[in-house]
Length: 309
Ligand SMILES: Nc1ncnc2c1ncn2[C@@H]1O[C@H](COP(=O)(O)OP(=O)(O)O)[C@@H](O)[C@H]1O
Ligand SMILES: NC(=O)OP(=O)(O)O
Image 1 (cartoon, helix red, strand yellow):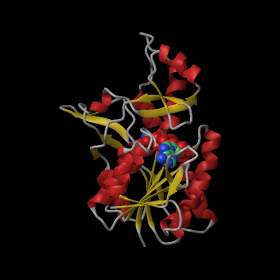
Image 2: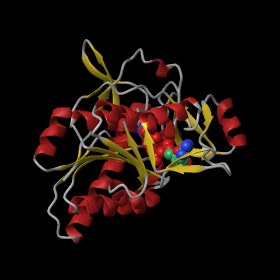
Image 3: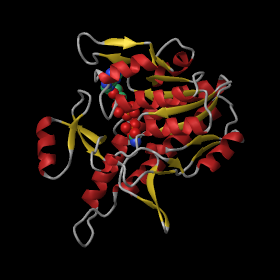
C-alpha cells in the first residue's frame, strides 16, 4: 500500500460546471480504483479555469461604490475550493457507495502562506479563466488584463502566482489522513495568505497547485506524487512534428530539457519543477505525470511519465 498525493489539474476538470461534473466522475473512478487497490490517497486540485470564470462573473455582477470589483481574486479562489471540492467529494462518495467501499471523504478549506515579497507579485504567470483568440486577447489587454499565450491552446489572462511557503491547516490534514479520511485539500494551490501582526490575511494571487501538492506530499511523507492533467505523457518538441513522448525522466535530463525551454511556463514547467522538488528530497520517491484515464497503469510504471531523482 502506498501513500499517494493525487493532483487533479484545473484544465483536466473542464471549463464549465457540466464539463466538470463529467470530469470529476471520471476522476472519481480512477481515484476509487486506487482506493480499492489499497492505496492511501490525498487529493488536491487546480482551479485555473474555474477561478477565472468565478471572477469574470463576479466582476460583471457586482461593482462597489467606487466601481471597483466587488469580489477580490482571493475570495474567488476560496469559492473555487468549495465548488470543485463539493463536486469531487460527492463524486468520490457516490463511486465508493456504488462499489460498497466504506470511505469517509472531506474537502478542507485550505489556506497557504506565501511571501508578500515574492517577485511573482510583479511578474504574473498563472493562466486563469478561458482561452481566447489573439484578437480577443488584444481587446482584453486594452482593458488592462495581462494576457499570455498558453501552450499553443490560445491566450489566457495571467495573475500573480507566488510560491507556497506553509500549509496552514497541515495538522488537521495529517490528523484526518491518519484516521483514514480521504482528504481533498490545497484546492487551487490553497487560498493565498500572508502573515501580518494581526494574523493571517488573504492576498490576491493564485498559487500553482502542483507546487502546493509537492509541498503537501513532502509534509505527509508520501511515496508518490501523481499529477493528473490532460496529456498521457510529458513530451519534448511538444505540439511539433518532432514531438517525442517521455516515459521516464530523471533529474539531470529534466534539468537539461528545462534549460532548452521544452516545458511551457505556466502549464507543464511548474509540474516538472514540482515533481523534481519532491523526488530530490528522498530518492526512493516517485512522481508521475499522466491523465485521468491512465492513472492506475501509470502508477504501475506502465504509462505516463515517471520522474525520478
Ligand atoms: N512539454 C509538454 N509536454 C506535454 N504537455 C505540455 C508540454 N508543454 C505544455 N503542455 C501543455 O500543458 C498542459 C498541462 O498544463 P495545464 O493545462 O496548465 O495543467 P492542468 O491540467 O493542471 O490545468 C498539457 O495539457 C499540454 O497542453
Ligand atoms: N491553481 C492551479 O494551479 O490551477 P491549474 O491547475 O488549473 O493551473
